[in-house]
Length: 301
Ligand SMILES: N[C@@H](CCC(=O)N[C@@H](CS)C(=O)NCC(=O)O)C(=O)O
Image (cartoon, rainbow, N blue to C red; front, side):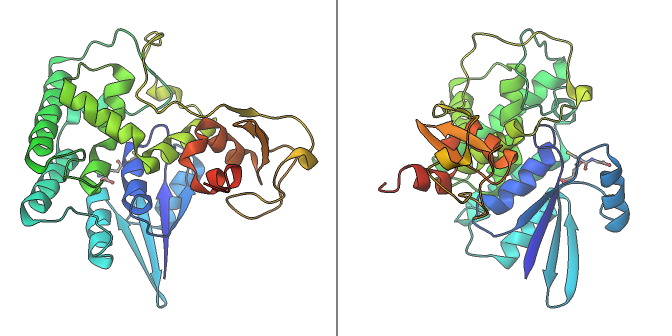
C-alpha cells in the first residue's frame, strides 16, 4: 500500500498545506509530488487524474487498485477511517464533533479571507487594510478558536494534540501573520503554537527552499520591517562553498545518498552535506525542524 500526495507550491497553496499536514503530522508514510501551479504539469495532472483537478489530491495504491481522493476534508476522513489510531480527530465525542464542525466551516466559508489575503509564506506586509468582509471573517475565525481553546483546554483546537482541525486552520494562521490582522491574546497564543509545531515548521522550511515566486499572489504593499515573527528562531545556518570532504557526513541525512559538493551548509558550526540543494536549503531554513539532521549534528542527544 502506498500514498502519493500531489501538492502545489508550498508558499502559496493553502489547501496543499492542509492535506500534507494531515499525513505528515500523524506519522503516516507517504511521498509528496510537487506539481507547480499554473504549469503544463498541473494541467497534465488534471488530465491524468480526472475528475480530480485540485491539489491536494491523494492517490492510494493498494492491492492492485488505485483510488484518488481530492478535497481536503475527504482526505481527512479517508485517512481517519483507514488509520483509526493515528489521531486525525480528537478524542471524545464533543471534541470530535466540534473539530468536524470547525473544519467544515473552514472548508465552506470565509470566502473573503480566502480571496485577496491569500496564503503567501514569502511575504509580511505593512499597511494592509482589511475590507469589512475580510475583518468579519477574521473575527469569526478568532471566535471559533477562542471557543474551542476554552472548551477543550488547548493548546490545539481539539485539546492537547494537533489534529485535522488544526491542519484546516494552519493556512489561516499564516494569513493573519502575512497581512498583520489584529489578534487578541488567545489568537496570538494559538498562532505561536502552530508556528512552533514541528510539521508546520518543516512545511515552512520547504516553502523557503523553493525559489519559485508567483507574482500573482503579491499585493502592492510594503514589507513589514522590524516586526517580530512568530517563527521559532532558527539555528545559525548558511550555504557553504567548499569541498565535500570537509563535511561531517558522507551520506545525506534524509535520503542516505552520497552528498554533493554543491549541497553543503554550515549549520550550528558544523559543515554538513546533502544530496541536493533542496535538502540543503530546507535545512538551512530551519535546521531544528529536521530530526534526522539533528541526530547527525548531535548524535548523543
Ligand atoms: N476544496 C478544495 C480546494 C482545493 C483547491 O482549490 N486547491 C487549489 C490550490 S490551493 C487548486 O488546486 N487550484 C487549481 C484549480 O482549481 O484548477 C480542497 O478542500 O482541497
